[in-house]
Structure formats: C-alpha cells, structure tokens
Length: 97
Image (tube, rainbow, N blue to C red):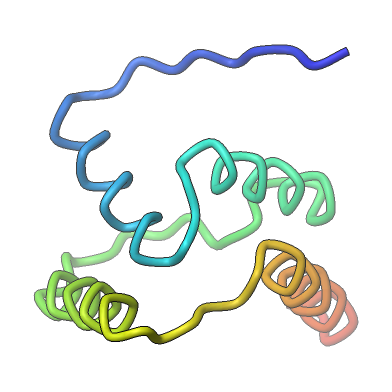
C-alpha cells in the first residue's frame, strides 16, 4: 500500500522546484522519492549540511539545463540517477567521507 506525504511550502519554492525538476526530466514527486531512497541508503541526509553562500551561477545553470532539454537534450533516467546516487554513496562511505 502506498502512503501519502504532504508538505506545505511557499508558492515560489514550489514553482522553482517544479521548474528545476522538469528541466531534469522529473516531476517533484519523483525527485522527493529519489531523496527518500538516497536518505535510506545513506542512513541519514544524503548530502552535507553546511553553511553556504548563495551561488549566483545557480540560476544560469538551471536556464542552461532548460535550454538543453528544449533543444532535444536527454538527461539520465530515474533508474540511472538512482544507480549513480547509490554508487556515490557506496564510494563515499568506502573512502571514509
């Protein structure tokens, strides 16, 4: 049986992540499922939690991805992305990271 997770977020955040994930060939639900699977594999948050100054190139990179996709470019499938994440987690763990 599938269970539902509901999260309330700001309209701007929702619009931004929808745009980002669409540019990656994903929907937001799939991206959230990918995060949850990666968290299980990592046995925690699957990325470092650090203070970070906003990267001004961030929006530029998203626009590049959108244009790449619109021009017929292909991104990894969900299965390929999950496999890459699992391999990265295993490699990071093996290297003591």
